[in-house]
Image (cartoon, rainbow, N blue to C red):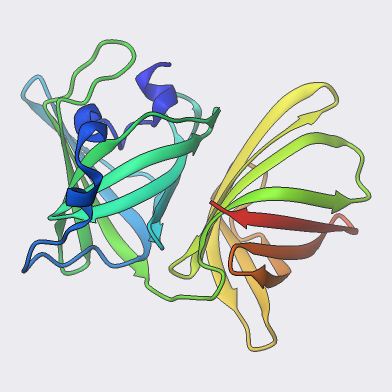
Length: 261
């Protein structure tokens, strides 16, 4: 599996991290505060390659909650989505990320050390010697992230679709990973449509009302006209590790059940 398929551009810091003592990784040194759970939006990326520095921006989200992470963005350099999710363990200024799924499907056996410096508005993430599939090697890449929200709900976490009920027969082999946290959500989907595999992703805001319903409003996604697209979702916990949601799309009621990852 290539580096890109394993995890994407934000997690190539230290593949040797998987060999560390997991008990030691869980211990917090005195004076080092863990990165707060929440939804973070990318402010800018500074890349130094062959001693030349460039600064770019892109619309990207990263959510940390309950020991899990998920990121998503539209990668203009590859012309494809870049999405990943998995376990996240904080240890002395390092976020140890273990991807479990990305835009190509489930992944395993990878662990990455992400050096994080907390700032007044969020954090910055510094990577050294990151390699691309085409052989390019960056000197450094510094990503600056701003905290969008640290709002919590009972539904926060990383979820995997268990079952889907709908009267729409056009989609088959439907799978979905969904992250909720920091007043935002991110979702990755794949399915078969008329014999062809399709993939989609999106992220946006997640607003819980007093009646228990949720308003999800798209910010960035691969669907047409996704930005600003709002959906009323009825969502409830079945138990601590399972939830169900239902919504109407194109006059069709869709009910989905998830299990916690």
